Length: 115
Length: 111
Image (cartoon, rainbow over all chains, first blue to last red):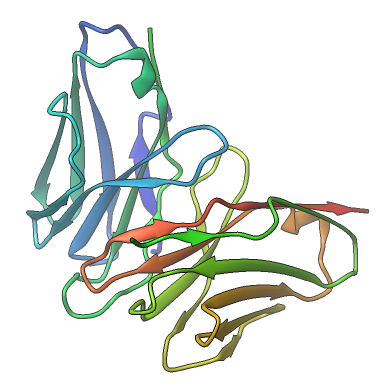
């Protein structure tokens, strides 16, 4: 199984809502990632988890809160978002970081619209 | 600072032609490079990778070339097919998993 799954596929939320994005992989990977991708732009790294610990936070606003409950799951909790946060949110996984760069496998993304 | 970029934002080819997509990088310390394909509405899909101790790597219909002297990366697609139409990103990865993407090239294959 080389699949990374993400739910929901689409999400529309107001600026006062609280919602969560979910990501799951069963490849035994111990590194998981969140990326943000605006239209016609490349993905931009937000967070990296390695062995369920947050290892990289690319100065992401606190209205985005990541969580890694176990080695297969990654969540992104959203609260008080702004319309400019509307984007495609991509999850990825790979072999553990720190032991060498490895290919990252991406999920299909969650298309988020903030109204 | 680090940057990975592309020379051409769009490329149009006829079905059956060979395609070449180019990428320049600026971090000479980079040691791992990846090409991804992204179709509309989907996440990036791994195509091929190459480490800095190599200058060429081949896959099925794809070849990646790395020229460290001029910090240049290219992806060659043989016998391009309509299903190859997508945005292609080069990316550079460091040891800790930080992936830096180039701006992307839109490849359009005409039947």
